Image 1 (spheres, rainbow, N blue to C red):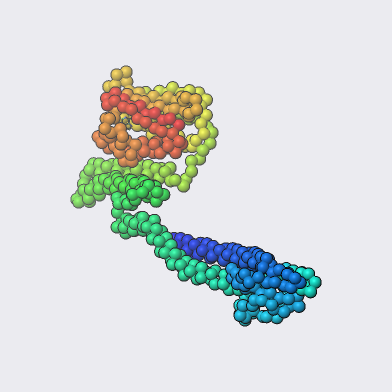
Image 2: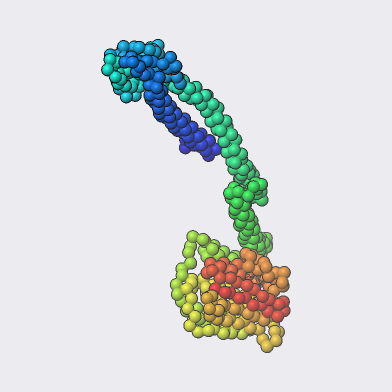
Length: 455
Ligand code: ADP
């Protein structure tokens, strides 16, 4: 039973229920019919015997049995006996025992010679000289049993045919209903066999449960395909980013090994190799950070902390980097904002946004370059709002949708500095969303950018 298909299981359960219902119906019909026949026969027998006395009279001290007395009426055979039990008129059916004792006003069943009879005797007392008279009515029960039997034979013949037809019909319906499952299974087999993640499961015509299941599976596959593609893209981006510095290192090594070089040339090559190593190291570190923070299994280490103090200390720590690039780092921090989140992650988010502001600053901005971090409590019912804005180079409208993707670099000329891999904003987005928030960017090229984090 365990290994049977649902189709077969449904057919078996359905047939078993159908057969059980048919058996119960036949049994109930036979019991009712048997009871009904016996009750009708009994009342008919009693009435026939009782009415026979209308034709038995006493005249001049003698018993006068009317010739009209019907001795076989409605299947009842009548016989008249003297008070001594002597048969006067009529007879009993073939195999009925002639000497069966007479019992007044008693209706009973007697089986004799393989036949079943219902008997009713009635005694009536007449005047002196005659004494009394018995009338016996005998009804051959097999007459009604025969009728019942033919109905039963008919039912037993017709029922299996009806059940068989119902099972075949039911199986067809079940098969038809499960057809979409077979199609879904075969489509899923094709997808996994051919590794073709662009394929989708076929949608049925009727909007039933299977239709909605298929829609959900297809949506799941859309997401899987996207995730798969993004992983593929990610691996190819990582390989590309790693290959570039390694090629430079190899080229430098070949150059200095080719022939004897001057001290100056060795120094220059080794400087270049060091720069590429630093870049590779930085990429590896960022990748490690990214994979650790995006590891779904590693839950956020949430705790209540003072977000205002965190913002102030991040500004303190980065002001040295900002100074180096002649950028003014400003803060407009509302005090005492307590937030329940992962403090380390929040710090990384702030650092990424502020260092971007510093990195993409522009020389000669009116009033000098600045990056401003603002923190506000946000509207009631929502969490704190962090805004990082700058008057830097800005981002083109076309680039804005992509900047939160991994390895997306809007301005390549600015990002070949050794530390820019296009990973900072994707991480900022992940951190914000992991805290149930959202991050948005607005920018005007040449005027500056503004990143808003609503927690
Ligand atoms: P990267 O390491 O290259 O800075 P990010 O993911 O942090 O990577 O940023 C992605 C791209 O978005 C950057 O390459 C840059 O072109 C653009 N960008 C991010 N922040 C700013 C900003 N404050 N001003 C201008 N461009 C920015």
